[in-house]
Amino acid sequence: MDGINIETLNLILRAADGRDAQSLARGRNTPFVQRYNLYEPCTAEDIARELKKYPAIAIIDKRDMSVIGCIYVKDDLMRYHVNSKELSGWMAPEYAGKGLMTEALSAVIPALLKSCERLSAWVFAQNEPSLKLMKKVGFVYEGTLRGACRRGGELFDMCLFSMDISDLKRHETNIL
Image 1 (tube, rainbow, N blue to C red):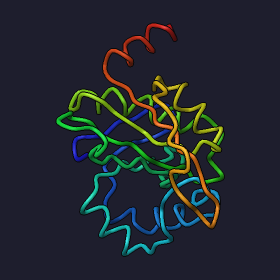
Image 2: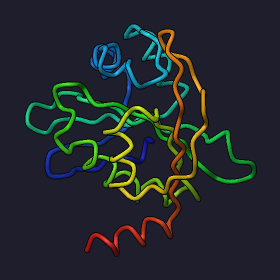
Image 3: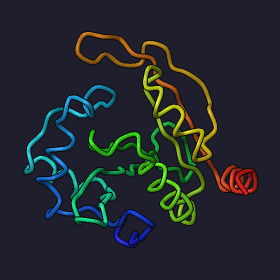
């Protein structure tokens, strides 16, 4: 993620690093973010250690330069001998529903597909906004893994989405 440095209308997207740890921990620990993610509560120190292992993209509001979300990029362990990356992420509750994650992903996806064959993302089946987001940015629904995870005593199904360069080109053609 070191090479990611993208500016959009409202956002700056760059590699997350230790200076972001406090803001990332604060946002990730909110009940809003915890509800539909598999993140455990964490400290800034936990985030700093995590960022050394797993690349992440900080989503920064250009107006005040605050970190308002994150996109994690990990190896996709579901595919065998395929250069594929798995995306996950979140947006701070006060910024959710304003199109900013759509803006962030729309800018990041083409850059990521230059260095891998496929992107994938798992979404809680009950997370309607994220399900819509995946389709809006061009991901293709692959299927649902029933009873995939337990969170707070509740059992959740997970929907798998993926995208390759041909999906991206087809999506870009359809939105023009």
